[in-house]
Length: 398
Image 1 (cartoon, rainbow, N blue to C red):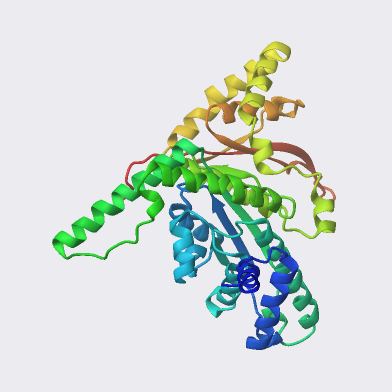
Image 2: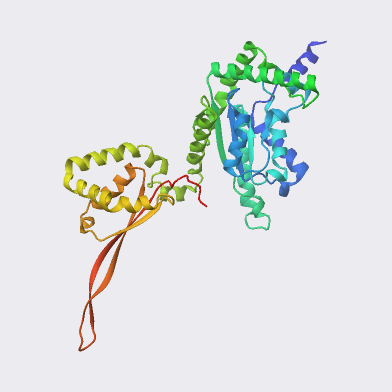
């Protein structure tokens, strides 16, 4: 082989790392294949990434249910089935960006993903992050172009959610090997009984060295990309170290946080002074205890009187409604006219596990009738209606 041929092969073997060049090449191919009016991408993209063994497959169904998606997840590794791609994956490496972006964008154009899609394993490189940004820019351009046409509904502005599950290296290796052992046992059972289907087994799930290498690839390449993704789309890494239920709660909190960022900047600026519910409830118990202790120290007499009213007049009514978990008490006690009486009442019920809502009503009561002209004079009566709700009895109702 001469030097010129050798140099030519080396040039062909080099992967283009310019995101703009890669994306533009793929985009031009799409326009040629589908036409501009058919480039109808999902309204919502959920980017699910994470360390090997972090549980992306396990959490996929939970996340799609949370977001109301009925389409199957798009698992990037499953899309890359060329012999070369399989060889690279078996070695714990990653397939080239142009191939990944091209296959993925064509998949996203399928009608079943029109409302939304969950992408398991994308983006994994900085180039893919930049290509994603350019895709969103292109979709926004299409939205603007078709906004006043009958096709506008097919070109909505995209919503991006990023869910990245993180575990440490030790946990990752343990979970990869455990998965490999489980698949080996299941496949052997299929061979022995003839029942079921053989499950594909990752080569990296078989040895400690291979599993450790896959984790290192994640930390050296994907980790950097996911951090750069934070510069474009705001999200937090989600700890996946604990039990499944705990991880699910972490995901719910992250989705709530990201949903708060979907508003138009002007709308968000108008509302940003209102706190999020989770911010209020974070230290709610400690604040409640602090207020009750302050009542005992600073408003001892009023605190005692409110407790006495609850004990002597409210509890009997509440107990009669223990099955339903809801009681309504009407009171004309003038004590509740004192400025802090109602807040104290609400806090006491909250500490005891009840939820109390107070409604103040003014009623006109006939007091005197003038027999000469028939005029009725009324006096006003203040009624405090207190609705108390709580968890009802578990007894089965007939």
